[in-house]
Image (cartoon, rainbow, N blue to C red; front, side, top):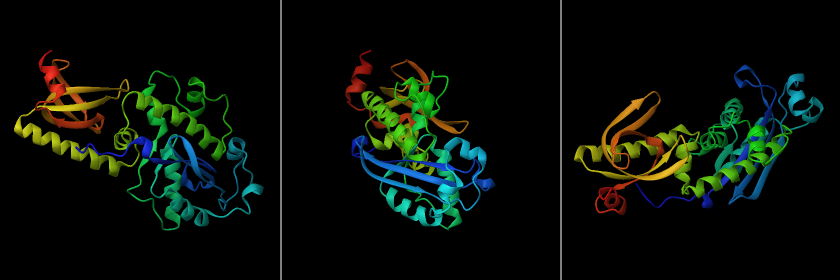
Length: 288
């Protein structure tokens, strides 16, 4: 695998959030507010904001959450006018959100109504997924509760820009945690915490092809591995045996020289693969 990867520090992220008339776009609920901040190295470099006319009455249940009234959106532009501009805004960045699948679901539904789609090459990262994997022992990972647990925030206003600003604070803290654990490549980050399955599957297939060749040749591999259960990164010398599929996930079953036992390594957790010939990791493992 190529070592010349884009770093997280060199990546521009667009953190976004939508407020809606309800929870189910397939049942006719619509976007009524969208906000986004473009950041690089934790610093805001651009912003996007608009109220959106949902072209339907605002349900009282939705108003009680975000306090966006019918009066506020009646003269706002429709999603047909707002979202093409949003697509231009996010081009060339990584789209991020907290529980981003919810926001992406509404975004794709609205785009479908005007015969547009998200670029299938646009990387999307779920900040909630990072929070859950790095801090698995917390009882709640909602944006408000997680922020409080991290000492970041005490309340949440449930308006799009406020949630974006809070998400950025959480995201910046989580990125520092990843970098402290030597996870600095953007591709690795997206493969672990991304939402764009097409991109993730493409990267994982390259790993599988590399491992399969090693199995055929019966050679050892050095891998840099992210243990999803504890968020730690370790270097391992392995002898790959076979590719296995368990549930919706693919693993390489291999003999691990560090653990001196056969182990399953999740493909998405493998950050780097290199030949074990004469490498420092290999020599160290042989001397154990």
